[in-house]
Image (cartoon, rainbow, N blue to C red):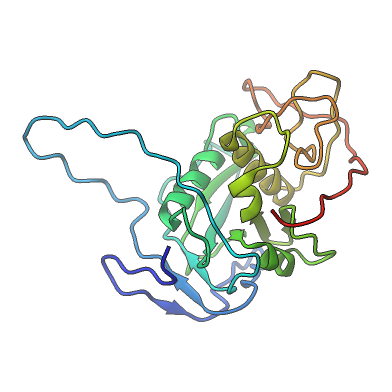
Length: 262
């Protein structure tokens, strides 16, 4: 995708630190300026012209490509009026995508994040949380980044592995290498893995720790580190997979992190 975005209006270049929320500090991007991806997330498409209906082909999944070391420049998407969840504490989140990533547009990425976090099997199902995607100039409780492996290391802190995703303070960092490629031998589709990584890292921001597989053949708790190993469980991206809370014993395995960043 191009390194800047221009649609109905010119690209707006913002200061590095956007306005923070009084209730929670909001982490700044890893480095570089922030640009806004123009486009209304809540717009309704105009009605079709009065003519014969046209059958559209199914969308084709485009390969996501990225450099190992990104620019540290971020495209923030406009927010949405929609609030996921009927009751509970409202948590607002921003969505940012590093400009070097191709094969997924910022609007498409934001729509996928909203769909995952708004799924009735997700964190809002228990009535403890409501979630809303807000724009870059609005107060927020956390920011979801789609980051190259090097920017993942800057945002996550700690030991730089370039492989996993993380939550660090108010950063929910999705490693684009995992978004593009999932992990070997996961046993489910790329879409299921993406649902897992978003829900797992957001779960950390909501105060949840790691969990263990409750038994062979059972669904993995979403807070199990499924990226590193399933330990007899089967993939599961949801905390409420059948409308009821599902979890495993607290703890984590001593799984090695694979070498490399692909």
